[in-house]
Length: 248
Image 1: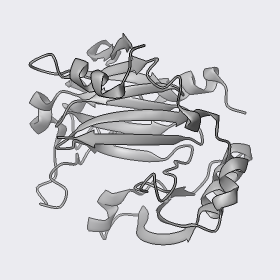
Image 2: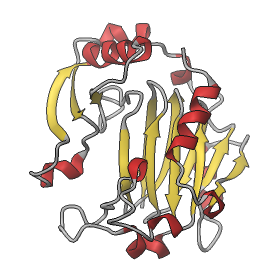
Image 3: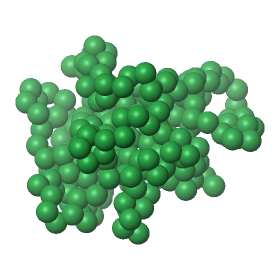
């Protein structure tokens, strides 16, 4: 069973020693409607900043769904990615890596839900993680395993990252620090950092720990507004489900 104390320990484990360079993401309590008004409010500032939004998901029916509810759609085929030994999509372009990553696989939704349950109850670290990363909500559900990591990267769109189940640790770097984050020169990965935030190689990237950042622990029912081109790293702290809403 997941506990807040466990989440705090995981967050501390991710932080480099230079704790003074981090700041908490600002919070915005939102109780109005419709949701389009929230978009307008978020973009009022000429230079939008990341914000944790509370209250905007209070009436979402999806927050009441359980794995048992979703099992009725268990035969639906969904695309997944599988991480072996901490691998991620950067390892698709690194043949020498000891980590492995498989993409564009298809499995029944029931397999994803069962994997989430198995991970939630297993005592030992899991070597392979199943990740339904990009699933159209209409087609069905995006879901993340505990420990699954999204590498430090940036997107060309505004995003409202909505946490339905579980919790996530998120670290954010201002786009003005992009070159200090060591993006790949490979055109397929130029929006992604070479640095593994969860285990920084201080010899290869000695100045990375000096780059200031924001961080938050996103809980169920909270949204994170991510301005375009802000760099962010995400780790699921327990089996969880998030929904992203992007716009230009």
